[in-house]
Amino acid sequence: MRGLYLNTDLSAIPKSVKFSEIHSERYVCKHHNVEIVYCPKTWPNGPSCQLEHHRLLVAGWFIFRGEKNNLSSLLLALVSNGTDVLKEIEAGSFVLLWDDSQTLTVINDPFGLSTHFVDLKASKLRISPSVATLVTKLHERDEVMAGVLKAKQHLFGNFTLFKGIERVPPASILKGKDKHKYTNLLEHYGENDLGEVGSCIERLSSRWHPDEKLLPISSGLDSRLILAFGKYNNGFTYGPESSPEILITDKFKRCFKHYESYEFDQIPTLENEQAIIDEMAFGTLVPIPNLLNNYVYVANKFTCATAFFDGYLGDVFQRATFLTFKGLKGELLKLFPMMYSITSFSSDTLLKARYNGINNEALQRLIADYHEKTEGLNLDDYQKVTYYEFLYGRGGRYAIFGSNILAAQVFSVVSPFASRRVFASYIKQNYADAVEYKLLKKVWQRADKLFKNTKVESGYSPMCNPILIPPMQLIYRILFHLIPSRANYGVKVSRANRKKGKS
Image (tube, rainbow, N blue to C red; front, side, top):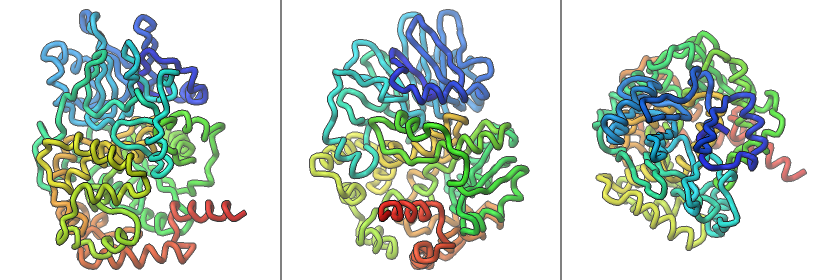
């Protein structure tokens, strides 16, 4: 499993280690008991640089002062001006280890995309991307979190299944027992008009040559927006044959030099795939099977591609999906989204609805953690819930695993919606308007007609009248479930699981 291992034992994840031996390289520093498992295509000269008695190691990638992966420039800035320069990191998914010959300092990316964990009970700093490598007899199982994991398939905040082991918070600096944030995501990069989102994505995308980039294109709007504002020579789509997913994305295949569509469940499977992902997800979430198979398959198909551009959480911003929830009330609100403006639900109300099924003790811990993480932020309740869920809830603790962690075992994963400039453009928007689809036209106004006029699988386009979208979506969702040929991959998997349960 790629990442930074500091004072840990990799013998606890043998299947992941064997997998990494095929797809990654290892940098070992025995003096500090450090090991970096990294992407050799991203760091062909190794993930390390030195300046006098300072050494900087990295697992992942970053954009600093407009340059991609200039590790020596970042080290010089750190030595000259201290950690304040970290505010100038525009994007990235990384963990850094800075050794100044006296102290070891661990730094992770602004959004916590790299997902590492720290042992709070150890006498010395212990860091790993895998909880399994940190667990000792000192770590008691957290039964409250065990109940959350069973109910929701993921945890929240920085909690894990074990007391004394926590996720390293986004934008953190760790020195021994000391821990603090180096930036507030609401500062440094000014708020932009929503019409500038495309330009922000284009700017980030331009850091890679089109031949280096691979874009998974779906029938939704997230990956489409990325495609609309960048050049990508490699692309793919998976889904059942003749499904709306395949038929819609077929309209975009001319945008790529190399494109392939295929059925997700018809590709070769890895040996021990479930065991590998179970090791990676241990103590944090219930993983979705077959995703790692998919990423290895496309890595073998597009051998020149090193950067995997992912639409991670784009729907959160474009359609305010972190305000919605399941159940009858949630479905009614999807049909009548104007109620979000009329009622002005409190953040506690939304969180209780979104985390329905966890017990009262877990709910109280969730609410307390939410208020701690959002205290003092110049945001309204809808913005705060989106912020929390993005960084500490379903986004940062569940969606991130499938879209970032697993794909990052064979690529450098680039998530444009989790970059400072795009985040700054979106986070302070009116989410009551966003959940009513009123802001789509602003985001898409500068896109080519092919992208903004083509319908998604739910029947609407970005330029559609917002009033028509909710009932249109309801009709199409019913059709997905009633007509087999209209099923996307998610529906197809659900049907297959139900059949297995009956047999």
